[in-house]
Length: 315
Image (cartoon, rainbow, N blue to C red; front, side):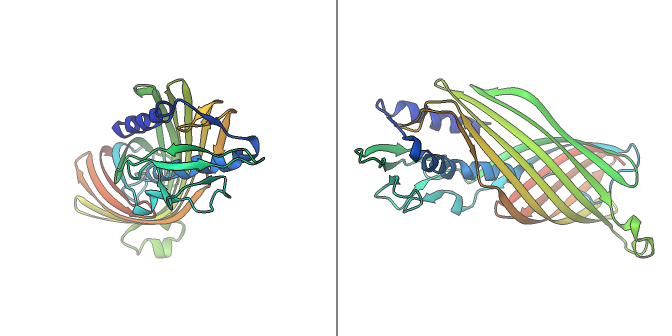
């Protein structure tokens, strides 16, 4: 949550660093939205990567009415490529700078001087793109409960009601997932394979609401994952691995007169960021001590993620 507070401080700089603002023209609005998207996209993709993790720590589903409650901490590693976005001709000359690139929300703390060049032969004006948090990681906690139903299938649920987690910050989260044993459908082969093999799918929806200096900003991230997972238990230790496909989409919303450090948007913003799609693989280990479980895994993806967790499980 400290990371979110730092994000708020940066947004505050939008409204305090410049006393004079320039309203962006209607025919330049698309380029203005692209500028906002370029700055916030790494945060959206980081949330998407984190939400698509910690769904499983074994391939074996619960038996009927078996259950678990698990707390996990996903630590998303932010790649160097997410620290900057290119300016160049990416904004059709509407936004230019003497610099080749500018910081994203996770980039350098240094701001970037930029020019707004409106159409209709109007004079140019200057504004300053804010710097970033300069952070290499973003932690994302997760609480999840699962229960076994029928046909060697487990249902998992994630939920957090709307909570105030800091000054002017409200978040809520919900999600649902399922894990289904595959070997039961090929008994001649499945009974001879000394391991568990399952298909897993999960969906998570995260809402973040911010209100800073009278500016209301909201981010909604929807993340979906599909995975083929395998595991093998030897005594108290379970090794597991998975390969899958991630998909996430984020929408940025702001009320009229949202101010980007001297560049003002005089109408309501509702920006759908470009969807993030990528393959993922992960490998992990779980320790079972009576009803208690401790697990750790690492996910290889565009945004690598290290996960640790502890839970109670009755299979």
